[in-house]
Length: 112
Image (cartoon, rainbow, N blue to C red; front, side):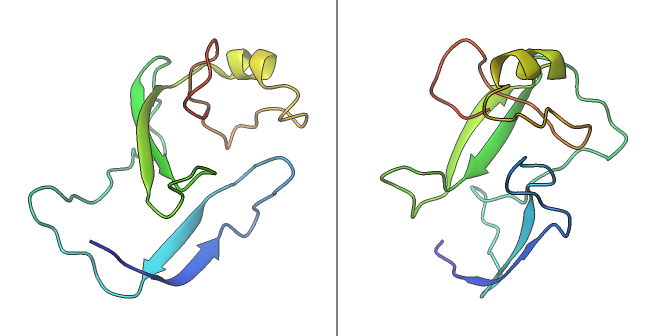
């Protein structure tokens, strides 16, 4: 299914320097149809603790040759201390309580 954006609403406290609250809601121009292969995203309850190493699905358009297509991959959740050690230079403000750290700390490929 191909859809266009109607509206994009960024989090009111989004910070492009630190990536804190880096999330947005996207309203599509036409509603999505839900055949068997298409399902809405399931989000955890805000109080639910996600254990380290649990796999989660991440998606986005990223900076790739196929940026017109939504990309997805599965990555493990990492402890914030691991993120602090491995991503200090790209997040000098630190990993905040509002961030979820996931990825492969020892190899490249999927984004954290």
